[in-house]
Image (tube, one colour):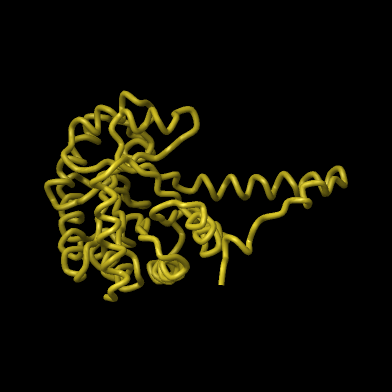
Length: 265
């Protein structure tokens, strides 16, 4: 643990006690530096965006690869970094704890653990709580403020049961999570119901059709974008490439970016 990491951890913890903030999700060191240059106060990785950089679908990376990715993103900027740790890369509580410890060693000051397994589906509540409790214990043991986010995956895994989602988030808070997250909430009413039912800060996944002011007014303390910025960038690349292939239109290649400003030194 370095003094810089301790400072980052304290800053990240303090952000959750202040006004609502946006935490964008870079997919590599370059995008992290751009987002830092644009003035954001913290960053979070995206499992789907990172998997894309390896030519894979979401859920098909290893813990070792994620740790290396976390180190690269953390070292790219001075901003606090939280890491998307999916289910902790294993079903047992020990897996969740190990994932937290390893990304903390890599420079991260936050991480999220979800209650969904690609092969087993959504974990039974007791097991899910045991996993968050183990992750929370690991987070408390790293020697600096580490912010644990607990994710309830119902709404993006075909089980949009708001009552169950709220019950899970309440249980995760009791188990030691610092931030609560239910990706896929589709309306301000759902966000308001979640935020009003829990005692910890809530992260909300931004989505087209629901404005940032609406999300914040509904009670969100932190707003992330997941892999969406990755897909915005790739969509622009594909559109330009298709125009070149199909019409010989190279006009998109006129794009210029202020890299000297974004990457000083």
